Image (cartoon, rainbow over all chains, first blue to last red; front, top):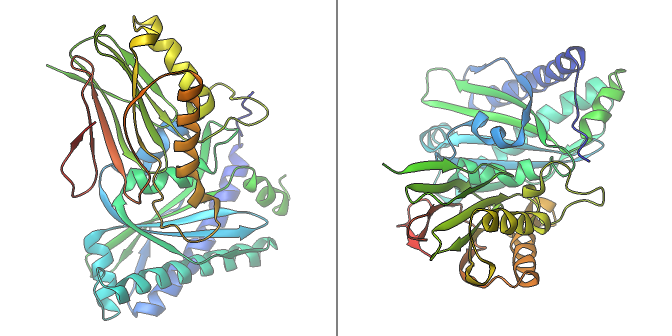
Length: 198
Length: 162
């Protein structure tokens, strides 16, 4: 039978706070990299039925540049940065290249690496959970199709998926993107235990 | 006026209404599998997420797993008037969205989904009319219930009839 995880309000707000700190650290790293101010939205921790999950992130057929950074360790997860194409190009432009070049691709992967690394470092520092990013991967395609394999890893025995989502905007530039952290199935329990809530 | 029915992750839809169109948008590693009985005007579409149900069983969503989604769709299509000997399968999806390198399980899901779906079709002796699986691009699928026509399209590509 499917045993759907249910988190109480205290647990969800603790998870959200962890996301908050991780995202703050990631945004600081991005600001230093591009030497501009970066705004972060309020991270949302949501437990969403699988059928609705992809649409919560955006229109399924919208074209995105996706940087996927798998996270390994005690809390395996996937970090996905989803950029509208113009935003990816604007961000690459700040670093002196164009998104549709080989250097642009490396640049986007490096951004995935830096943001995910800062996020996981903050979580590890706060909770003692040992996690680290793997090399980032890149795709240019429909949002729905880049997200489904990420969601698939979290729903083998559960019909809903927990994700931590934030919007990031670079001030004064046409650059905004979604920052999405999806723990693998069961991985959040490790986090809750580390926070003394498990 | 045709009515479009969205079939989201781990969902299925069946129709014998000629005005219906069954749609799954943005399939990556997921599979869109249609079973069509053209002469009866019946079609079903399921949006498969994972290749195999876990040892604990498929739970409340057999449509999520290829091994349980295919027999589930077959049964539902037959209940709506389809006949086993006339059914044809069309499937698409099962892509590696993030390249082929590495051993991360994200990489493997698409190919395993396609393989497991085809195995289940063989087991149930349902002939495959057409398939468009694998590769590294996302796809959307539309099934026209009246004609049994299936179209698949990806980003920046013209739609293909399967």
